[in-house]
Length: 449
Image (cartoon, rainbow, N blue to C red; front, top):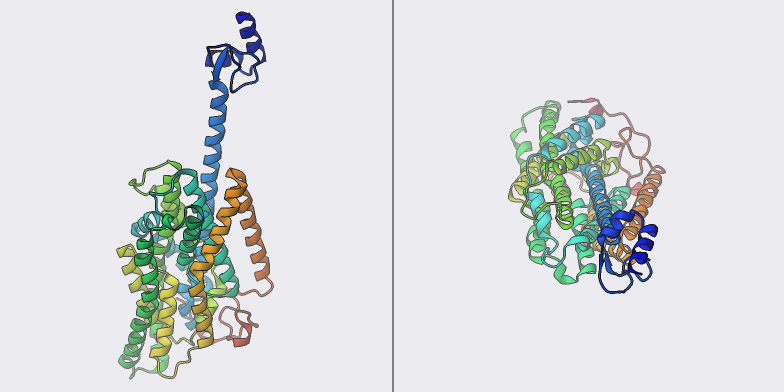
């Protein structure tokens, strides 16, 4: 009877010889993992191995989806924040629009390789790694990234220069709270390295830029206006380039930190490992490509909607922004370059006698800043809940597909009121938000680097 049962099992199993060798003989009970009837075995390691391979493959696919989503966020960060570096240079005619975004893209690419301090802050200073790991942590990272991307796309469509950094942090915080509770967030790190810098950065930037604007006008008071404008336009090429380089050292690091966090969750690397080169390279390329496409809607708001900027103001704003962003990168503070750049531009308006600040536009931007963190947190929490309750790889893929559909919708919606290199410097109309009429030729737009 024993020999007959073994022969029967061997005949019906896939990979008969391996299956028979991996089935350990024991009491007269059925195999718990296969369909062989009355097999004298208790464990079928062949089938268990297949199941293990399936689980490992699913986790790897989830990791790949998270990495792709992180690079997509990096891409949106690039075109969303291009205006931070180049808006004033484009507005004053120091650089032609296409030249400006190309230069900014190259310098963002270079800057991404110069520092990793901010990446370390993002990887270890937002989510409490002592409370979650493995696939649960991967799901939090994925949902947080989706929350950040959705907020970036929504504010881009409206032409509002909100913080990509805060959108990312908000998404991660919301997903972590939904998954673990309040203990899932490193609140000390969030307070000291996210919230406090966000409150101080625009104020400091406005003060520095305001004082700088007063100084440059006072120092050059005896210089003819045309000569002064021309000289400062050339100076703006250098200061705008410095901001782009600084942006790469700060913002690309945030995506590096998120991918590093995902790799730790998957078990691919340890928490104390060095940043892999391929992570640096892919993040640098993604943010550079996004920058090259140019976030024209936000460039227009910063360059034309907030303050009418002359070349001396542009240089003062860019110099103060670059100094603050580079300092924050050195200290490992994931500062919002949007907050810094906007504060600097406002400061130049306050520092120049007779300059007009459009407080209605500033108010809308301020409101967007205040709701960015909680709004992205809500989206991140919802995305986590959808992926979690649908379950596993299926849940992640469904949320990812929904993200793609949302991105396509936002792009198609933007084409109804296009803003591009041809009309980004058109006169601002308070009643039209970012919508523009046909551009009017201006002597300023004929200047190049």
